[in-house]
Image 1 (cartoon, rainbow, N blue to C red):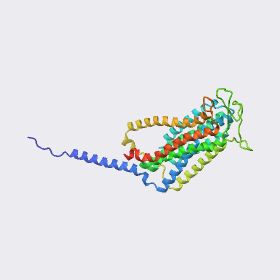
Image 2: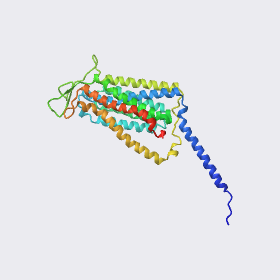
Image 3: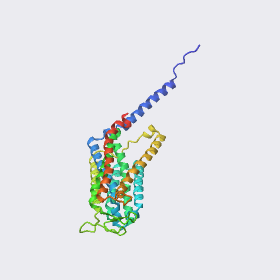
Length: 349
């Protein structure tokens, strides 16, 4: 015959501790989730507008190089094939900017981290068309590329900070602005690109830029000055990015947003290190392929359009329209993604 044992006080205390820990963890999660919701609404919208303007300038800065690549080479009395490292420098700078800003995100003021890349983009855009030296051209391209990679990374972080769990459509809107800037750049750059005269002698598809000889091309200058004509779209983009920097600084100082505060507290304990590392690896592969293909097409599609047979040998105008068509396809997809993200995001399940 068995006798029921009295309740164990240690078990009751353990159960109470587990309940208390669960409530405390729930409170921490609630604090992290609702931190974005306590931000002032006008400040949130203004800073989001500033981020969107920055992404618009970033898109223009990214696509302008592919459109002006042949003209920049002509200004240096080179052909496109003489500057293969420019592509590597641009890609390497983009990667370095993303990694560098990721390491600094938890150590520096986010306002500084958001403005500094834009400043680098503006400086790079200002320098690139005015340089008539190959090495200096690579340096200016690297400066702009580092700014591009850094701003895209910190811009995504700031969007998540401002909107929390409601960030999905806003994040898609920011990237819509980025793609829209890329799509409008061909129309901005077209009047200032060198005319393309296709070589009919069949010399390995070489390109003649404003001259009968591909080896000694002419440089087109703004009338009455020594400034290359291709500088105009670069100066327009640099000026726009500089205005975005001023606007972003004004919004930061005139509102009560504290960009030193982090939303990432306690998330490592909740998710686990292995989960985070796995997700980071998968996201790295996805963006490595997606961004790599998009940026590469953006860089080479204009060059492909003007290339000699077996290329299509299009004119300057047709090739710029081809580039714009490519980017507007991405714009359309990004536009629909703004609405799809609200229905198919993990938070809506």
